[in-house]
Length: 161
Image 1 (cartoon, rainbow, N blue to C red):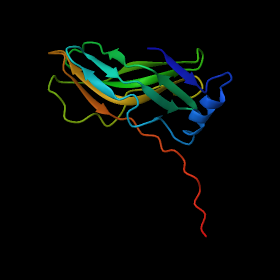
Image 2 (cartoon, rainbow, N blue to C red):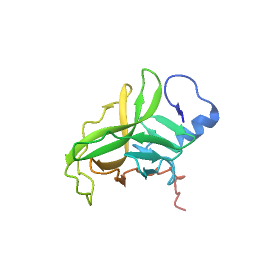
Image 3 (cartoon, rainbow, N blue to C red):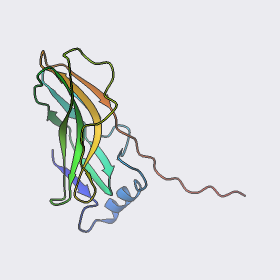
């Protein structure tokens, strides 16, 4: 599926602005609880990212269908950060698996506490992490830890009477 994004260069419609502006003030977030949920794909060193919207760095990126992201076969075990990469030079967003720490082939019980190097150059190239995924060389087991943050939409101010 192709990602569509609003917030890069160019004009946007009123409907697009309404969807984007409701997420302003958030960092990297999923627009809704079910948006872009990452799950393991059985029989493959891959994950499936559900349809939905992700917001970050002033850009709202939406995918209308599930997308599969493959991980390379590690020597033993390895962590990957499943991320949405935004590239301002081409005004595009795409899912990537960023290689992280290596481990043994023993299935881990918790994700790492620090990320590998992520792109953080806003307006040029950024990576929005949405899940940790671990796989190993012994089989096609994939372990997924959801790290999406959910959007907090602003509420009208409360006026004391």
